[in-house]
Amino acid sequence: MKLAVFTLIAVLAAPMAHAVEYTTVLPKQSRVDFEFRQMGVPVKGGFKRFAVQMAFDPAKPEAARATIEIDLASIDAGSREADDESAGKLWFDRSAYPKATFVSKEVRALGGNRYELRGALTLKGRTRDLVIPVTYTPGMAHATFDGSFVLRRLDFGIGEGMWADVATVANDVPVKFRIATTPGK
Amino acid sequence: MSTANRYTTTAITLHWGVALLILSAFPLGLYMVDLPLSPDKLKLYSYHKWIGVTVFLLVAARLAWRLTHAPPPLPDGIAAWQRRASSAVHGALYVLMVAIPLSGWLMSSAKGFQTVWFGVIPLPDLLARDRELGDLLATVHMALNYTLAALVILHVAAALKHHFIERLPFLQRMGLGRKARA
Image 1 (cartoon, each protein chain N blue to C red):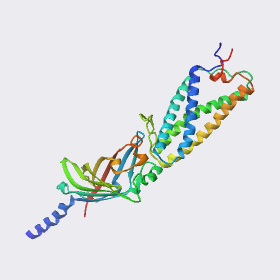
Image 2 (cartoon, each protein chain N blue to C red):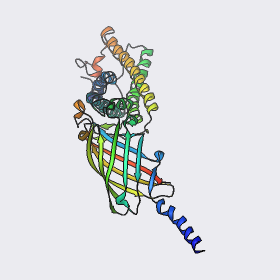
Image 3 (spheres, helix red, strand yellow):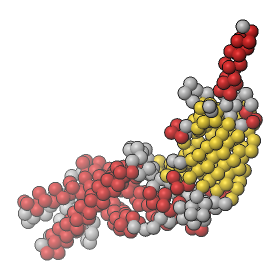
Image 4 (tube, chains in turn yellow, brown):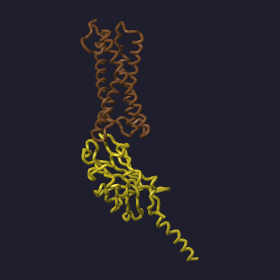
């Protein structure tokens, strides 16, 4: 009898202990968007395809990690013409650098459901450290992680030559993402 | 000296101001669309839009002025059908001068680019972003512009014909040449 109870507790407890670690990303509910300013006009864009590997346990946030790989060919740069232009050498130089990669280094809990995600973004062969505030929202169907940061495009050589003029296309590009996840199996 | 066969100074100023802006925006539009994407292209698009918004506002002022100030009567000796044609063309010009900037604004919204007048005053986006609708509105904008171009040619040709061939005191109406004697 005792053994049966222990077994039952063990069986019940085991999945619960792991149930809170979010590792499975839902691509349809996730998004990576940006908004750049062109001639003072905000233009919305985003990436349709990106792969996220992550693990997040709210009980151990400092152990969380995330890797995001963005397929730059899936860009929506506001117009077809800009989509095509963005592939060129002056922008992403996509044939040489088809992906943008973010790799987390550290996660700090800021209190409540807010965290600070620190890591390195590699874009067009250049790597820069980023500090990204992220809000975690638990939910019934899935949990979401919303983050935003300002990418300075010239730090990565995005828009060189004639495009380096920040009066035409601003240097600061606000980036917003939402990653929807469910606990892994 | 009578001003009976001359538009008011306000109407004349608005007429030529709008004419000048349209004569800038039209070739600019034709030129800019085929340029490869570059910062210059983005600048020209912005200037084109700023001119368009300005035309729209000036035309609103013209309409308000026109509705409260009767134009000078046409000189005697102009056939009845020409009088009817004249008011039809003037009506159509007004419609186009409103519809063209409006179609440009809507196209810009549909294409996902908000119009910000002089880079300072944002106009609301009346349409959500929709690339197909944007392309359709681009066609509409172009068709309206070619219609306007045809009507402007007719408008100018008619004025020149009345003035130079029929030798009627015509261009004075719009402030050109010496002011007509009564």
